[in-house]
Length: 405
Image (cartoon, rainbow, N blue to C red):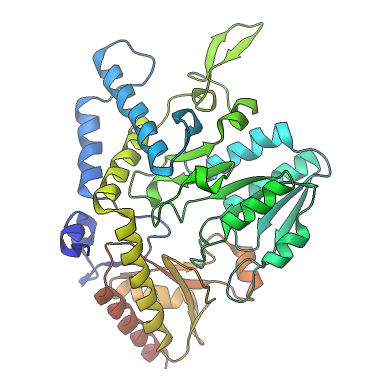
């Protein structure tokens, strides 16, 4: 059992009031809050060792570099990568996907090749592939989902062919919290010679991810969704693939030698980390992972799963409330609508009650069109949320309904 009071005390933002009401933060799918362990570490980093990495011979630069490279090792262990060379720091999931679309796309995608994405992907896992297809005259195909927001595997198998070169799929749906069958998808993809990128932004903080077990070719996630700083993220790629891919950007740190006649690029992972990296942000991911490990991912998954199931059960009791989708495997998020009440209006009133939820399309417009809606109210949960907060959310929704009635 988790000591929820102790955990909540680690997150100072949860102690504040909004409009005179105790803050209930249910927007963790957009960004997670930061524990004191991360906040204090970042402050100490800037206060004591801040210096640009890799380029300095003085002690501060050495310490800063050590923290940065140790973070790479921590992340390697957390997702069970084969080597720290496979861990590339980026600005976030979006840049990681764009890196693959640009660099992998340049090397591996040709005219007439096909790329598959699901119908519920985040825009950042759609638009870069559209841009790549336009550039390379490739074809983007969409795998449909059923009314429960689950991938239709039979339709996926029909779309899969020897023309398929890449499948880009979210581990967990940003819009609906559906856990996608990525193991099955990866196995089938590799049988036809296709590569797979997994968007792990909504999964890596909720349950264990083993990239070697999954056998995915790429895996991406963002620091700000795993209790670390914003503006930092991770791309995992198989070392063999990354070695064959051209650099994404040029600049300092990604080179061995430069002349006007010829430039030699650095070895992995620096080949893909041009310029001054967000080294403090990278180190903050490691500190956030240390915090998660101190609680235990299995404990987190069990607690959050129980909490989301409780929320789903309680929300279902509210007349006129419709939950979008009922997936067999889900985590972290519930999307719903209130009959006759616009999601923005409901979200604004809940905010006045101190309850923070996300409203709109959740950067998944095609998914909303699939269900013929303009958006939803999304409550997304973390291990610092409680059943009491779920009860307050339900009371808040009843207040909203009463106002509109």
